Image (cartoon, rainbow, N blue to C red; front, side, top):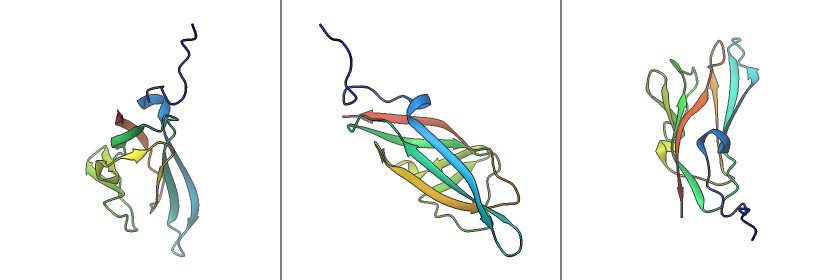
Length: 115
């Protein structure tokens, strides 16, 4: 009997299935660097959606406006992605920010709902 789980049957895991990539993309004329951030739900199970994605973000601030519906700081060290709404399997959330130096950003928690 084969007990191997297909990708559609595998449950998603916080440490393995959320990916945050950040990189410098340029700078403004005044010399302030700009950075892009992409947060991917790389879970292969199409039935699983990531909710309440929180990012460890220090004292995050940006000299450019970021829609609070995309990314916002709730408290020192705690930022919320997409108002806590679902990020489907294979979906990503993207934003840019400007600051003198990049912030050390990492996904700190996520709740997967698999239906």
